[in-house]
Image 1 (tube, helix red, strand yellow):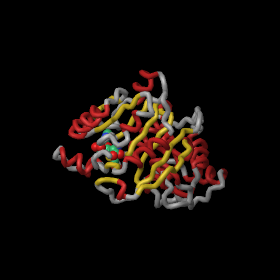
Image 2 (image 1 turned 60 degrees about the vertical axis):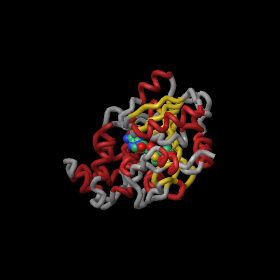
Image 3 (image 1 turned 90 degrees about the vertical axis):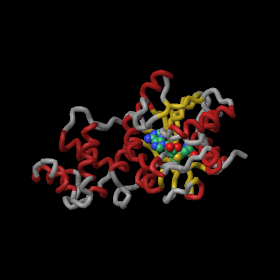
Image 4 (image 1 turned 120 degrees about the vertical axis):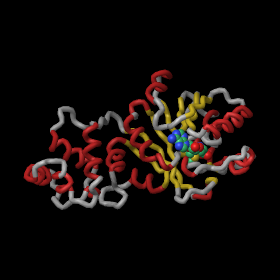
Length: 280
Ligand code: SAM
């Protein structure tokens, strides 16, 4: 049985850093299960986000062709290198830095294959990472992510519910999200203040999103309390034009942003801007 994360940190005179979202998986059986559920295969090039003390890195390396373990914290990298050296694993590369700045395309091109992403994410950057993965999905085959439950709820939310937002629209159009397992705070050291959920993201094929469409959604969802009519007026579109388009799409003028389905957002955008290339 390996040492607990608490003991490992103590041994190196370290403390978990809240500001870096450090909540380490305690039970090796849970780590094994996460890796098992990710469906990683021997041909896969895997990028792990936030490797920490290697709870997922080690079981991953036994399944994948190669694991690129991204970790921001220099002090943890020192510990991680010692832990990995004890296991004599040769297919792990450590990359120190911010996962938001990593060059995912370069790695995919270098290995001539799409990459798989896995991570018990640092929760303070889970939303920007989700936007980034969406942008890079041409080179990402699938992603298995531990998220705070409320972010997973947003990805899975249906129109008309309180959790429905921009990520629900974008992921609703582009991906199939599979909820895999829930973990209580006690599964981590130190325990986070929120529940967690592991989800798997598989992209739907051939779906392109225009940058303008994402901007359009960001504008509308920044005004959740307004009606869609008022939110669109603020984009400088004439009231009469908006009313006509909403009526054609059978959307009431007093509808609020969270009540419109992902598919209707596409139609709305296409009707307003008539883009040369369709968003879908
Ligand atoms: N994978 C380990 C586990 O499951 O026990 C650690 C997971 S912990 C929730 C998140 C990890 O992400 C921490 O080790 C933290 O230092 C690291 N981290 C925080 N911000 C990061 C960033 N911007 N880029 C890469 N790693 C980051």
